[in-house]
Image (tube, rainbow, N blue to C red):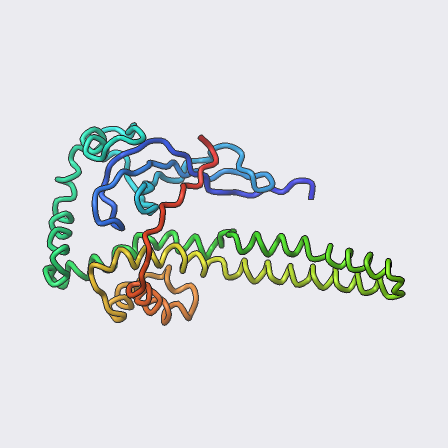
Length: 275
């Protein structure tokens, strides 16, 4: 094709504020990202695109949170500015705005039994609700990760194995050199393409298990939920029912993460194409 175009979401940093992160369960420094939808040419974005929304990117855990920028006094926080100073300048009413949640978190530090059933149920459901849009995007547009890239590289390289094999057999005088070489090259390319398709098909599941489930598990660990609690929390969220198996497996998968030694992940860098 002479021209290959499409659309893509583009994140652009536009500021920095302090706010409460529901995944860290504490106030944190947040980068403000402008999310635009732009035209691409061979995968490359052409400009910032039309504004879709603004989101907060937690600099501590990497969570993305929707936001109304009108709540902030300013969004021009400086990089490296201490959290108290950042909060005083960008969101001076932070403690008042989050007074109820901060009081709940203070009680939760003494154990989940210090929350009533309604409070605990709401806190259990919140991370699933906040990540619902990200889960939707993961299944609607599976991300290209390292596994897909490696499968593509293999699909490109395996045919050369057949070529080198043909040259080696020809040097040894084999009459079947060309046929064997072509068969190996074609078979290698076909296997590579199959690997790309399989890896792309599984990309959403890998993103869910590597990125989202550990984040949910770390957030819910202080609440000490059971598998039944998790199933009830995500029962009425359609984003978690893309695959029939996820209705049964997701609660068990999150429960397994809760009891595993989940290391604190370094926050991923926001995917920014335009500065």
